[in-house]
Image (cartoon, rainbow, N blue to C red; front, side, top):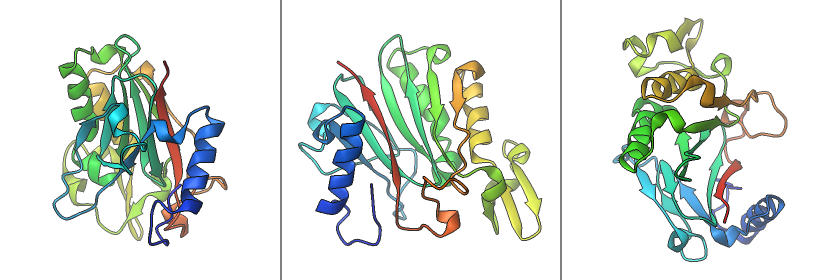
Length: 221
């Protein structure tokens, strides 16, 4: 879905795989918004962008955002991802859909909490929100040599010091953040797939540094 080893992230070979993936899901790739994650020095990792049909790949190659939000029907949100948590947020009452990239940077930036607030600013009630957190790197494999927020009170339950580094529970922290923001725990569904040891998923932790799988969130007509 994305190959960092290629000079063009939208080359025909990669586009062919994206189109096939979308077709299998019953969606035309031209009707999706391609989400671009920026790691530039000035990135804040909490950028939420509302999109519609004018934002799709029929009109633009991609939209730079940490979370895409739409109230438009017939618009798919397309995110290439590896170990980070592609997270779908849906309000079944208003019909709004969001696709978020919850990685280490955006988690530290409290993106999950900011997304809930964004939904509320659009008229949603946090208690109605449904959350799906996709395949991701589990805590036992998310090991860093150093983690800056490790001593902050909110992070302490989700950080464990082990020989050789710090084990970080990104999904656990985000679940806590969502619940504190008013989301019902029963409405949060977390994938049991660990990208570190599943043969169908790319994982940076296992040396797959260029490839990505993808998640699509789609609001049907």
